[in-house]
Length: 153
Picture 1 (cartoon, rainbow, N blue to C red):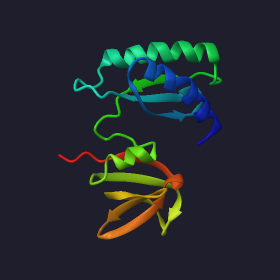
Picture 2: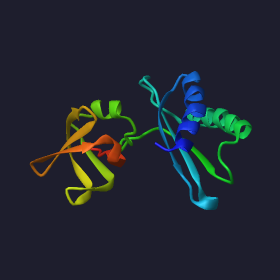
Picture 3: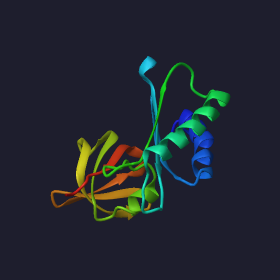
Picture 4: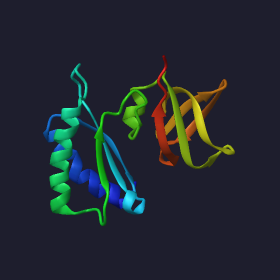
């Protein structure tokens, strides 16, 4: 986890949780004028996350970021629910989706490949166990660049 990510999370998480939402995770994509800070929020309530929830979090986070100014240059702030294809940021989030199909990309190749899509079998220590075509892989969590739940309809 980068230092910038840690600083941003330390500023944003308390704001999100103070508003009564769960901080699911965030992505910061630095691309010059097209940089994006994307924050994912969730709730335990049956109603889920709506547009007004996102707007409320966006206003509060924007105010904090304007004061603290942790990001140099211009960027777009986006707040949304994780959705059906929810990204997975923390090892504890993977545990909740054991038995689901996930897609993940590694930072470096493992067994000759970087992309895996298969059944999330479980978590062993700091490794994610995924079954792809009847073969199980134990992938170190710290090598995972991006992971998402694959919606099953």
